Amino acid sequence: MEINSLRESLKKSEKEYIWEDVPLAHIESEREYIWKDAPLERHNYGRIVERKKIRLWQIPPTTGAFLKWLIQLSKPKYVLEIGTGIGYSTLWMAEPLSHFDGTINTIEIFSPKIELARENFAKSKLKNIELLQGDAMIITQNYPKPVNLLFLDADKENYLCYLKNLEHNFTDGAIIVADNAVDCDYMMDDFLDYVENSKNYQSVILNLDKGLLLANYYHE
Ligand SMILES: C[S@@+](CC[C@H](N)C(=O)[O-])C[C@H]1O[C@@H](n2cnc3c(N)ncnc32)[C@H](O)[C@@H]1O
Image (cartoon, rainbow, N blue to C red; front, side, top):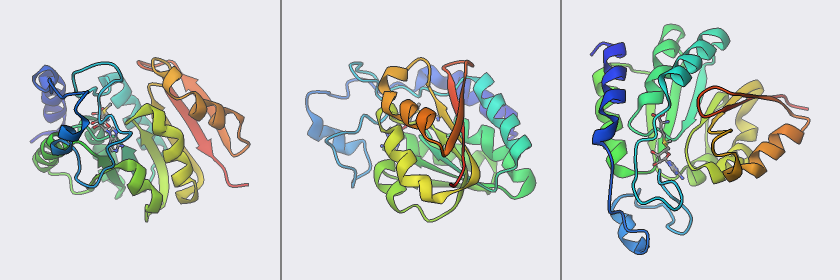
């Protein structure tokens, strides 16, 4: 399927994918929805704390276009995305990457979304996407590849943990993009403080859509 039409159809169908009645009080029953090895204590797999519905929470198209532009400009070989959803943001990045042999690995924990993302990646015919199923908290602990560009768009309260787990994977000058740095800043105070105050990072907040933290990582 043509990539622009596929992306548009994913964005248009957003309202069809709302998982309701995921019981907040009965955490054991969540096990049927999440990756089997994920610990249950602390994940929210796409649910905003205190809200009951799980939605796609896809990036706006303008954020997608920004990511595409950034990739065309910086030409990263190895991109890692945390929070695939059903693949909308992944497709914004995978398509420009495919023009210079760049690859994207993307991590998702929520089983129904993993299935849909797989279907969408097959439809796109792009061959440079690897979907990693599971809890990013675990996967990032032993992530085997270098990272030239990291896109964070999963559980906001764990951004700092993901960043620290991946620091030894970052190449010099690696780019970090974190979504929701303005609308959900209160969920990632520790992450924002760390990046803004560490001498290894140069960062700026871009007030586009939900707010993007943009940073470069430099080895000492
Ligand atoms: C904002 S949505 C991602 C939307 C996607 N980036 C897009 O724009 O199309 C966040 C996703 O992160 C996933 N997620 C939340 N916690 C996670 C975790 N610990 N490990 C992996 N994925 C997680 C959720 O299931 C959800 O699909």
